[in-house]
Length: 278
Figure 1 (cartoon, rainbow, N blue to C red):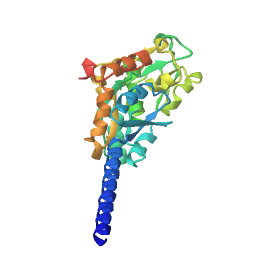
Figure 2: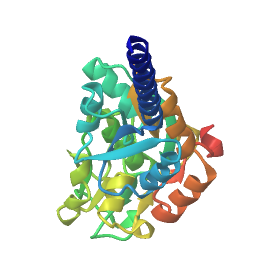
Figure 3: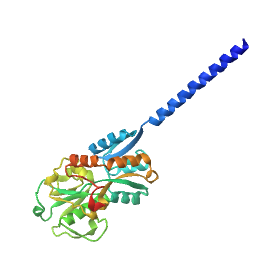
Figure 4: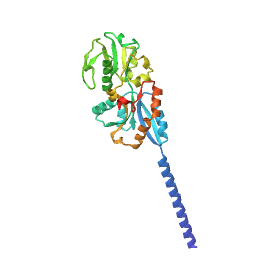
């Protein structure tokens, strides 16, 4: 009798252990199949390309969550504080300037697009119509202010000294005595009712539905444009993160290049396969 009882106890123990083992295996499988969520900060509301990238990496168990910011000051702060995992809004020059000023260690893990800045106007249709004393708006953050000034110089409206990132103080010639004012980049398109012309970043122009074909001047893409290539940024400690590398690889693909060309109608071009930038 006792032997039977002991035997039953042993069988019950083995069965119980087996159930725990199966449960453990099941949990391990669920864990291994669990999606990894990656928060990516962007500026503006147009995230069509990132939605296409998200569909691609979904198959690899990566769930991209887009976090929208209203200006250029927020995404790097959020990245540095760990509120997001990556961001995709800035140029290499902007990132370098941000790191220097804020003592951060944010790095590029891949290029995305080149988005030429352009000069727009509601009051004139060509550069030749800009007259003495006219008001011109440019973005006010350090790198885009410099880029806006270089755009005006390239258009022949002003001359600059050899500063790497020029400021208003670096204007050496302004024959038309243009009244150049620096505004938040997001406000440059909105300023068109108040100024003769405004230097507007591509993303801002796209969000504002400005017609690129009607821009009175557009930045030329040359080897010197490399500092203005847009990038995917991460904290330095995450630069070799395998999941993030998969996202970059998915972005830098032929089908996403086609998506960029289709969706942005010339506002932006894939930077990773642009010959003069590589």
